[in-house]
Length: 118
Ligand SMILES: *[C@@H]1O[C@H](CO)[C@@H](O)[C@H](O)[C@H]1NC(C)=O
Image 1 (cartoon, rainbow, N blue to C red):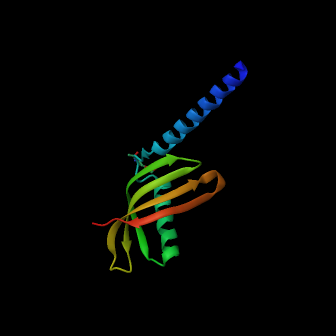
Image 2 (cartoon, rainbow, N blue to C red):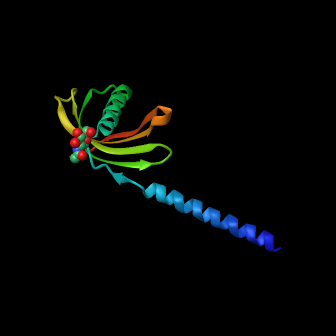
Image 3 (spheres, protein in one colour):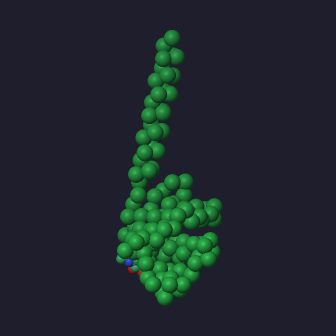
């Protein structure tokens, strides 16, 4: 009886631990302090290139306005970037992009790309 009770407690405790670490990783966004970091700029340029390919757009990357990273089975980059649109008289706008990068697997994916209004 006693050992069974013990293992039940262990199971309950590990479930608690697992769920709290999942919460922690969701909340773990870190502001990027250096917006001219070549790695971050590379991610921004990748997002624009990928978006252009997907929807036949002609955006040109200008700069990183703001950004955050999150470690989740790789690195998530959530960036606000500035880009000009060659199909709209080079109007400059800000875009919110999310890129998932897993450098050791050479995997990189554009998760979302949306224009910010205003
Ligand atoms: C940001 O990164 C760039 C490129 O690595 C470097 O030249 C620059 O000095 C850095 N700026 C700051 C404030 O650390």
